[in-house]
Length: 326
Image 1 (cartoon, helix red, strand yellow):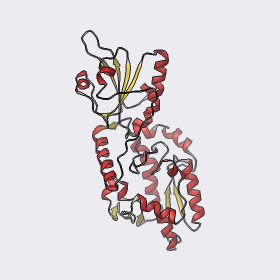
Image 2 (tube, rainbow, N blue to C red):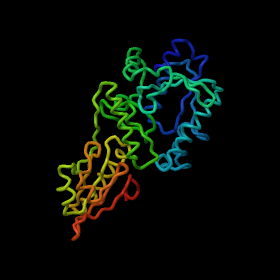
Image 3 (cartoon, one colour):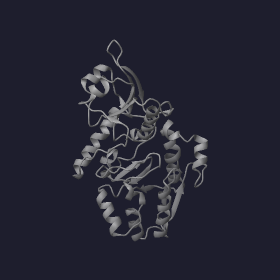
Image 4 (cartoon, rainbow, N blue to C red):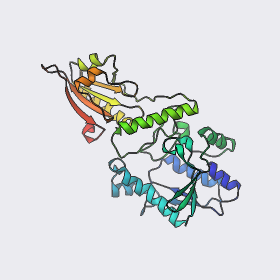
């Protein structure tokens, strides 16, 4: 909105088209917001580009052709069809020699080293807001009485597709709620690197590093202090999930995990349903000795009581899938 308002104030809308990529999977609030923006800037030449062969509102047709779960089964292909190809089409169609984005270093991650000007596939890419902070953007929006997506008021600082965007806790970096759906798990190395970036960004902005919560009313919370009692010495079968509260896949799986736990409890009241926040805690030595291993989040174990040999019986599941849903 800052760029659009500055473009309008300079009288450049007649000389500069504005391109929007409609993935067909945006929030209803986003589509309504676009309408508000066009009313605010009637001179804006808005060009909307969508996946090849599809028109406005054809999400169902897209999902029927490529599969409604394409974004989870092959996110790279989903991103190409819904974002990369439409963007390339827009740049070619508009005969763009240069284009302007609203990306900022303060958004963190790979954008932390963002230059003001880039050379991208034979075109200049200009990032005029590169040094703006999140707070400066919002100060501008409010002081100029600009419209904004109402999802921002519901805890969504960064907004993309409905499937890959979630609200975040107050104080978290703005893009913490954005994730790619191509995996059913978060690789530990990549995920831990992301956490380091988030912690560093929180320090840079002088805000607390807030750990979000995942709701689960029936889950027993496991930590190193009660690991022996709750897990190693269990007398009943149990599910144990190791998760990160920053992992998008963990957030998507959380309600499924709770529902599965409720179904199991309905059949076997003494069945245990537990979880361990692996960011706040580490698996104790007794757990590692019992065979619990992690290389991704979330990781689930079906734990059966120890046999006469004294060893727990463990069955491991990584990610969330139809096997868990079943």
